[in-house]
Structures are given as structure tokens and as C-alpha cells.
Image 1 (cartoon, rainbow, N blue to C red):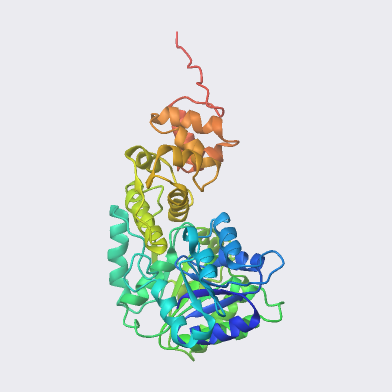
Image 2 (image 1 turned 180 degrees about the vertical axis):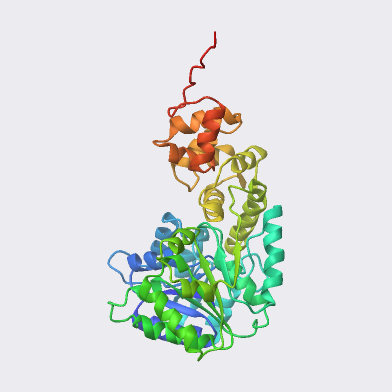
Length: 426
């Protein structure tokens, strides 16, 4: 079910939303430029935006201004402009400079809206199909995929554990697509969907969770980010599982921090036993640098398909720099970096200069790039002197604290990266 943001008046959402829901899509709405940008930030990769040409917002009168604001906020979802009796001038203004990808006259919504929308949404099997894990070629990833293919057919509940930014939901969707329940519903329960129960438009948690189980009956429930659920949310989910009213398979995703939360009792043990008949650990990117190149090329291919552009190429030096960085935020950080560089490149290539000056990631990237080509001892010294704490240095190097301390002892380095004088025996 594709997410589609409709930016316009309440009547626009009512009219377009009804058509999109009949077409199997999941529309959300915003009535101003500011609200539209905030909603767009929450959209998953591969979503689409419908914008009324005449938004009529005090901050934004027309859709071209809104699209420019989206791009300045580094939001690259494709935009289709709509309106009543759009003129050729309106269409040119909206689409000039690759702002909007298409337009549709509002008076032809019933005939054209779904055709236009489906043209620009991900197709099953294309590179941005969310039921396909990000392509990697390392041995650790290949072993995980072999394990998932076996597990998918077993109908056992699964807990998928991994660091942030690895696309754990994709692995859950992949299991569903390969399981005996592939033709049955897939419903996702996500923590933010019901923690804001004080808002009048949000159903109470118990109702929301019960509704999800009803929709998923016969299929699969994905409990997304299980480590974030409060005790009440956990007990509500556990109550539905124990009721036996629904035939559902449970797939849960969680950050690696869930291990600590199990140990200290924050996570309900009974829920864990139900959700984790089988546990799968997704390998991190910083431990598998051989996965950087295929992932970077995949994200550049995605970007080109979405924006109908030639695929941006990487120079050998830029590729070596990408491989030399630890990527603490994993595939998400790599995707944001290469797509941002592709968006601003005027040559159709990503160069060392692009990575140093235009990349999306925080201060750690420029620091890490400076370490490129150094031997291990020099990298450790550089990281220690470039970060405020040893813990930050360890993250930059892609090591745990204990490994960094062992390396410091190996090279006789103090906490500031200076050589420790060796005692000379007489």
C-alpha cells in the first residue's frame, strides 16, 4: 500500500483520497506548505506527493514554491500537480526545472488520477520495491538471506534485530512475500501510531491494536521497533496474541538495544517468547565494508529512476572514500549521502569534492574522509584527536570501546593519542 501525501484544501483530500483508497493506496493530507513539508519528512522512500497548484497558503500561493521548499529541505519524493483548468503556463511553471514530474486536471480525477499516480509509484520487483532487502554481497548478508528463505516457509514467529538504518522492515516484508501467507494481509503496528492517544483524532491504543489484528487475520502482523514500545503497548499486544481470536504470524523488528531491555525487564518476557520463536541478526554496514559499493550503486539507481535522470557515476577516488568510512547509521546514512551528492552534481558524477563539500551526513563524514589512506595507528590517532571523547572516536572508527582500548595498548597510545614512553630495562 503506497503512501501518497495530498497537499491542498479539505475538499481536495476528500475527493482525491476516496479515489486513491479505492485504488489500494494510503493517502494522508496537509493543508499548508509548512504542514506539507513536515508530513513529507515522514513519508517512506518511494512515496508520492499530490499538490494543488493553488495551495492558497499564507506562506505559499502556488505549488512551484512548495516544490522548491521541498527540495531545499532535501525531500526528493516525486510531485504531481493538480488543479481546476490548469493553463499551459501553470503546467510549464510547475514542471520547469524538474520540479513536478506530471500534472492532472482536477475535473478528470475519476479517469486520470489513478493512472497518473500508478505510473510513478514503485512497481513490484523494481529497485525500490519495499519487499526486497537492500542488495548486499558480503558473506554475512548472504548467510542471513539463506536463513530468511528457510524461515519464511516455516510459519514461525520471527524477531529481526539490527542497528538503525539497515531496513529491517524490508526484511519483514520479504519474509511475508516468500511465506505461505503471501496472498494474505500484511499489517504493521508502529509505536508512534498509538502513543499520541491524547489527540482526539487518534484512536485509543487498545482499539488501534485490536483493529490491526482484525485486519491481519490469516496473514502477518509486523511489530515495528519493538524496543520502543511502552509496557502498556506491550501488554495490549500480548493480550491480543493470548486471546487466540486471530490467526496471525508475528514478525517483530528491534534495535540491538533490545538485548539490554530484556535483561533489565523493560521488555515483557512473555511477549518476547511469542515474538521470537526465531531470531535473525542483520549484519551492520560498518562491519561489512564490502557491501558499501553495491548499496551505493543501488541508491543511485533508485534516485535516477524516481527523477527520470541518468544514473550518477562515482569516481574511483570517491568510491574508495565511501568504503573507508564506518557508516555508523548504516544504509540510511549511505543512501542520504550519495543521493544528496547526486542531486547537486552538475557533471553526472560523484567526486571526492562532492563528498567533502556536499554530502548529507554530519561532521563525522568529513573527519572520516580525512583518515582515508592512513594506516591503522594513524587513523586511531587522528580519530582520538578529532573527537571529544574516546567513545566518539570508537564510533568514528567503527569499533567498540573495548577494541579501541586494546588498539591503544597495542600502539602504546594514551587517551589523547600521544605515544606512551616505554620503560627501558637496565
